[in-house]
Length: 154
Image 1 (cartoon, rainbow, N blue to C red):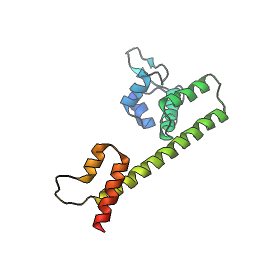
Image 2 (cartoon, rainbow, N blue to C red):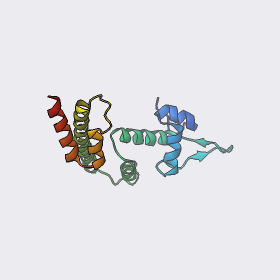
Image 3 (cartoon, rainbow, N blue to C red):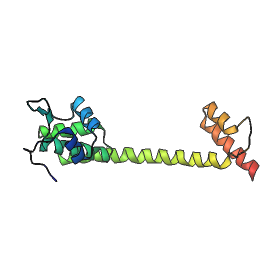
Image 4 (spheres, rainbow, N blue to C red):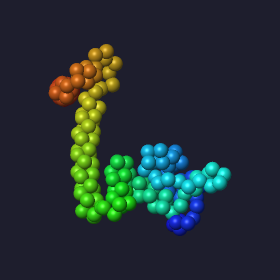
């Protein structure tokens, strides 16, 4: 269902059509990410096909992990006809690299958690070595604690 540019939608219909919440649409308007909205003589906002296109773009850019500022940058380029596929591709390559780094970090965290879970018994001890290592704020202390605990359980 693609709205023609002349079609007029209330904010609820726009939200249903694009899969965005009304609050999100209002936020995007507040920060200037959505274009001006025409009001009816009764004061109600009415949205058209351009609002649908823009909101769909923003939503899809967010699904690709882009920030609102990055979406704004691309949209500004489109509005001023000053973008190129190369500039968009560069942005996407940078985004993919950042996500790859984040995945590596999350995998490291997952391994550390798995190790801590494995060595942390169910004993009712008052002095948990893992908590003490975490309180010390040193990764080496946590690694040492975990390896010493696993040595004792072997």
